Image 1 (cartoon, rainbow, N blue to C red):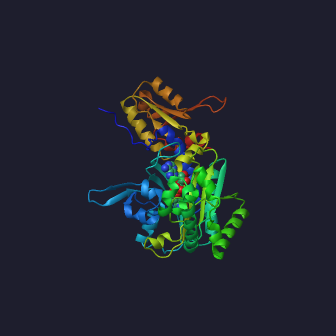
Image 2: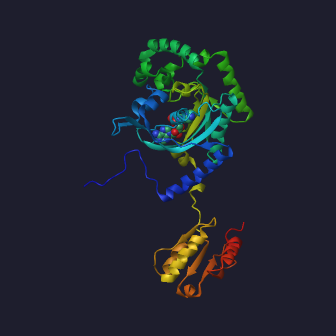
Length: 426
Ligand code: HAM
């Protein structure tokens, strides 16, 4: 029989690897809480129609990459490829999308059937932030600043912010007319993939990676030149405010993003330290999505950070595990019971406590405590059990020698004092 394996493009994360994830996530969540952003959790599984209507049928995500299947009730379901459409749906459904001004975040697995490579998986994780009901340029700036600061706070180097504006619907329609004419004339100079996109999703041709296509596109009409005066002003105000905040940016007129819901601001943050999958964060404004999905007219903007890429970028300092504070060495029937009781008491403190359950010899348990570099140990053997006490020993942090005390198991005050003086003291 073949051994069972995980599916291609999915990854098991083991305890040692998760230390880095947890340390990074802790900082992310702290930053979000400090910015007064609230969490929202939506299902991983949604009706397929949500993504067709929300993301757009002509996008690669919807047409090629979704995990879609019929459930036992013959309903077409899809594992979410991203979080924005689900957040919009949830708010419309709960009648909350018109409740003005909500700042929300979510974190969890997303699914896209892409070709796996470093930084690209079929099940990957995103941290997403959505500002719902926000219309002002200031909200665009806050979103970008938030993404930028979160990444900088994690010490990530070589960050580049690329921005563009996609205008509003009528700007885009005007551009599209002229762009389609140009595409018909220049069709043969485009790569095959781009030729196929002419009818499905012409805007996406703009971010083709094909060198010949890129060269041909240099002479194509520019969306920028079709922007209304209002859209122009919005974009230039956005840039000015980024400059005030000293957030460096590069304009990329070919940045169109892979999802259809964007209007006006679109942005991506890349890092030179990543390989070909350099985009660690992508986002933009989506003023029509909620209305288009059946909700009231609600402007919104957001971004998502790819956590696998973020973990690749985060430094070694995030790989350091928290040391055990107290390792409880115990042996003998009564001693083991008392040790269990003590370990429960110790969990009332912000300490990392490990109760040895191996039942092995004292010397083996000592070795394990040493290996874990535990800051202290508690010893309860038969002698201690009879006397209803335990030995607690703090290992020397410098040359002062180890510090040891015998404390009665009934003396909770003595235990607390010892902990406060030795383990919790700053
Ligand atoms: P997205 O650009 O499709 O945007 O994805 C955001 C980020 O998720 C990417 O920049 C990348 O870091 C990560 N990512 C995407 N696909 C994969 C993959 N196959 N493997 C690993 N990482 C991946 C969105 O999803 C939008 N919902 C963002 C948004 C929120 N826009 C407005 N609000």
